[in-house]
Length: 142
Ligand SMILES: [Zn+2]
Ligand SMILES: [Zn+2]
Ligand SMILES: [Zn+2]
Image (tube, rainbow, N blue to C red; front, top):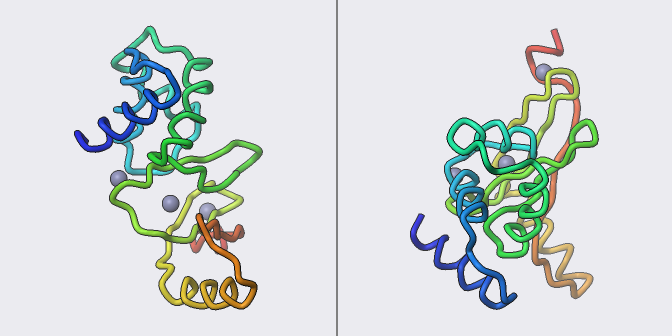
């Protein structure tokens, strides 16, 4: 986690922002959470230890975390944005169940090759992949 903290601090500094206590708390919570989360999930997680971080602060801080490269928005579900931290996780695609909200991750390798080839044909430089599909998981399909 040290490395990410340095990264985040450098990023904030480049924007003339300080690593305030709420920013640090939110960063640490995000890095502890290896799952997909929305702002409400994150708020519940933080509230257990830190009662003084408001939901509004989390909303304001997420864009900073995204811009710093620590977090990405992975998908939208029921009009909520869902995020995950990127560090230590490979590119993957998401299958989201519209019935129970379960999110499955699937390996990306074969598709990535294909997309890279398509991008090359268009002379397009990819900076981020964003792939997914929604439907019913195996439990809800029954
Ligand atoms: Zn992780
Ligand atoms: Zn389901
Ligand atoms: Zn994911």
